[in-house]
Length: 234
Image 1 (cartoon, one colour):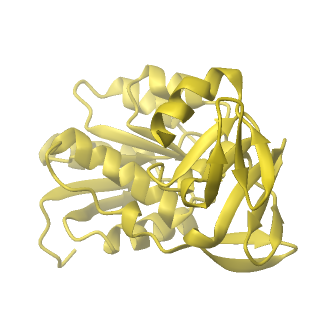
Image 2 (tube, helix red, strand yellow):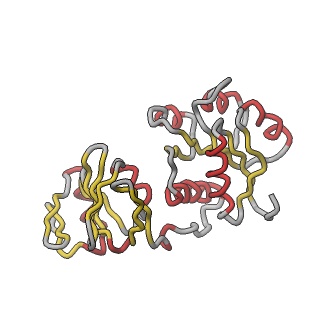
Image 3 (cartoon, one colour):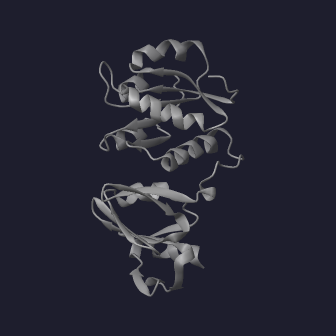
């Protein structure tokens, strides 16, 4: 890499397209550089032995040795962010102290959140690159990609494997879980009020301990969320 950077990372993934996507994302981050990309985890051992690596982006299901076993084999591993197409390894990933767990396809906004966790760990006093500057997200609905202004989102409603994103202009139905879209949003502006609802704080006109009102629609506050919601709104 030509850019001068404070931190170095490697990418390990048996899918070349995943290497390109993650590498392209890192190119947008000024002070992190890719010093190696590998389709086989064992090929990365040499660089890990011979130079300082701050962060690994690591796939899990790969031929030869999977990402979890590979990480366990490194005596003093760098910080790791798992990048995988499978959700079922999350608990084991965090058992080995993963910094984050990204499920493919990975939106850039979600990638930034993981990078901010890295910055919080290596330089806690630094200002995050920022989701607070985020102006829009891209959502797929009805086989089309929609660029949605963050401030136009009213609330998001879970429908199990789908979400309804209610905006000032329209409602989009997206094949995405509520936790997935929650990770794309700045939690200083959006608040989870119920297992089925995330709300844009800017759009709340009335609230009580039982509900919030958005655009003349009352949404319930879940019992387990109540204290945190009221605290943040007050």
